[in-house]
Each structure stands twice: as structure tokens, then as C-alpha cells.
Length: 298
Image (cartoon, rainbow, N blue to C red; front, side, top):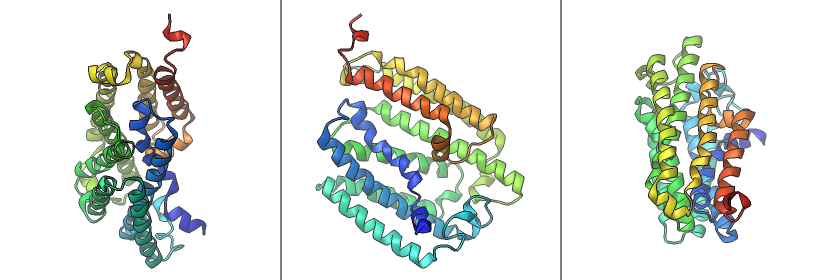
């Protein structure tokens, strides 16, 4: 049974927590009804995501068997028959569609999920082999999560929030491709066709560039007139220190520790980044949800 659970990649469901961001940034995170809707939406998105992971694994069985880590995946290792994986993928789409309809009966959430599914099926069937486009598709998935979360709780999203999310996702995708290049050079085997369009010099330049852009975009978001009006405070810039610390730590993991693998894996194992995120959330929570705290009356 554990191999069937691994097939779903539940660790990667952490990416779907982006659905909660619009509600959190709007200051409505602790509204019980919205939390319930978002939780069901999270499960719907996770079903669709797992369905896509299975199809991607099915398509990449042969390549995954050459990879030191991916060779341990359930289908690549032979622990789960490919036919079982396809059936499970189909069932997950049905379950996810049903959950999405329960949350949003006007079908906008289903539309977002449909776009996400078609885009990622295209990714699995060849778009991932096109350098640069492969990373853009990954980053667009996070934008769709943000949009889905906003639809579920009927919240608007600022332009800067969308831009910042896209840039951060692209930043992490670049780091992942860099890790793939290093692995390819050390093993002597080609892990994915799109890597022919990358080299370390290009990816290192892109990482440095996007790390700066992410920080500047976040600063602009915190000081944007629309953000200040919506959130009712100009103090969001206090949280920038944790964004800078998180980006610097991620660059340290990539360049010094040479462990840029999956961003999700880094999130689960790097205590520095975990503490930074918790402090960022705590700071944001204090500013948005505790406006009458003594700190704001000085």
C-alpha cells in the first residue's frame, strides 16, 4: 500500500497551500467557513496534481530508471503496475472534479483546474522538452493555485501578488534545473531533453537575477498603494527581512551546499528556511490580525 501512497506524491501537495494565500493576505484567514471551503479546494487540487504526477511518471518510466532518485518511484521501480497507475489517475480526476463542484458550483474552479490539467498534460507529453518554456509552465501552475484560492473565497488578488508568486516559482524552477545539470554532468546521462538548452553559466546568471527581482517585487508589493489600502497598514515592509533571509538561504543551499533538488524537499528538511517561513507568517499575522497590539500604539 505504501507504494500506492508514494505514487500520489503527498509531499508535493504542500505546493497546493498556495490556495490559502489570497485569504491570508486579505486578513480573512480565520473565517471558519472560508477555511472549510479552502480545505476542500486543497483536496480537489491535490487530486488533480496527483493525477498529473502519475501520468508524468508513466511517460518517464524509462528515463526515471536512469535517475539515482527517480528510479525509486513506484512505477519506475516496478512496485506499481503502470495500468494501475492510469486507473488511479482517472479516478483522481473524477474525485477532484466532484470536490471542486461542491466548493464552487458556478464552475470557475473547475475551469481553473481544467486549465491546470491541460497545461500540465501538455507538459508531460512534450512541452517539458522545450527549454525555458518548461520552467514557465511550472511557475504558471502556482499562479493558477493563487487564482483558484481567490475564486473559492471570493477575494480579489493584487497584481503584485500575482507577479511576486510567478517570480518566486520561476526562481525555484531555475534552481531545480541547475541541480539537473549538475546531476547530468556527474552521471554522464541525459535526464531530460530540455537540459540541452541550459548550462551552469546561464542558470547561475538567472538565479542571481531573479533573486534580486523577487526581493524588489516583494518590497514593491508591501509599499504598493493598493496593498496598503486593501490591508489597512503600511507596515508590511517589516516582513521583508524574512524574505531576504529566505532567498539568501536558498542561494546558500544551491551554491554552497550544492543541494538545489526539489524545492519541496528543501522545505521539508531545511530548518533555517522552515524557521524563516514561520517567522514571516508570525510577523504578517501580527501586522494583519493584531492591529491593536501595543506595538502599533507607540
